[in-house]
Structures are given as C-alpha cells and as structure tokens.
Length: 235
Image (tube, rainbow, N blue to C red; front, side, top):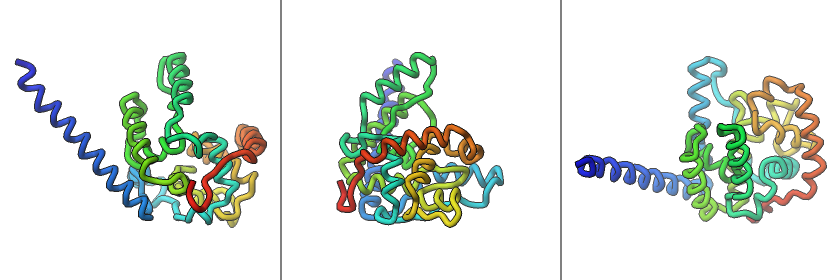
C-alpha cells in the first residue's frame, strides 16, 4: 500500500533534481559566454546584511582575469588547491583526508573542497554542511569542469569569493584591506595575506592583526613560486 502513495513523491524529487541540474547547466553556459555571476551565496549575504543593517550593500567589482595579479592567483592556488590546474575538479585524496578528520571529531569540520568545488557551492548551493550537499557539489563540479576552462573557473572564483564582511572578489578585497589597493597591483606579500583569509574571511576581517595571518602568509610565500596557474589562453 505504501508503495502506491510514495511513488509520486519519489518521482517529484527526481523531477526537481533534473530541473535543478538543467537550470545549473544553462547558467554555466551563460558564464562560459562571459556573463558575470551574482552567486547564491552573495544573494544570501546581501539579504543577511540588509536584515541586520550591517552594510547597505556588498563591496564587489568585477575585474577580468588578465587584470588580476599573478601573485594573487598563485597565492590562492597555493593555499586552497595546489593541484588546481592538474585535476578534473575533484581531489579525492583531499576528500578522504577530510572524511577521516570528520570521523575523528564526530562532526563535519572539513570538506576537502577544491577551488572548483568551492565555486560550485557558492554559485548554486547552500552553505549547509552535509554529505548530501557534498554529493551535489561533486556532481555539479564535474559538469562545470567540462563546460568551462580552468582560466574562466579561476576568474569567476577570484571575483566572487568572500573576503570579509560583505566583501566579495579580488578588487573589493584589495581596496578593503590596502590603501589604494588594486587587484592588478597586489604584491606577493599582500596576495599571501589575502589567501590566508579565505577559509574564515569574516573572522580575519574583524581580527586583521591575528598572528596567524603573518605566519601562514610566510608559508604561502615560500611555496607560491612553484604554483601552477592557468595562462591567459586558458589552461
């Protein structure tokens, strides 16, 4: 008896999933043609800031890939996803390491997400941590990697990632943290400091003198010379 009434619900869930996937693919195609995203996470943060009256609007300004300092590209890749150019969007070793950490802690504290996976989450998904959302993230990441070149993925990521309270993208971050800051002219030291902030941007925005910023930035500076980034022709 239960099979009779549960079948329509299962079909409805499948239908919603298919529609969502198609919707995401359409938007990825538009992003591939140069459309500048306003991500799901940006929308959620804009609403939160309006409700709490912390800020009247987001700080954000799009800059093209060639107008972003290579220092920042290398620092972010070094800090967030050293294998970005080489993998297909998903780093299974990182995911397994995150799973082991989560089991040890008894809760989800790490996700093992690559730059591409982080972008997928920010573009389309909620910020909730669950294994179901991680599965959705992985599936959409593979689709995005098939549709967009690495250069475009990194360009969108650097223009849409959160860098502080209501601060999104490289240009806004440069102006927010450095006097007369410009995404195109970030020094290696400045870029390394910005890369440190990515896992916890709101915290570091409020705690800019945290000793961890300098310590971690020095580690990134030593490693970023070997970082591989997409070139302007698209890797």
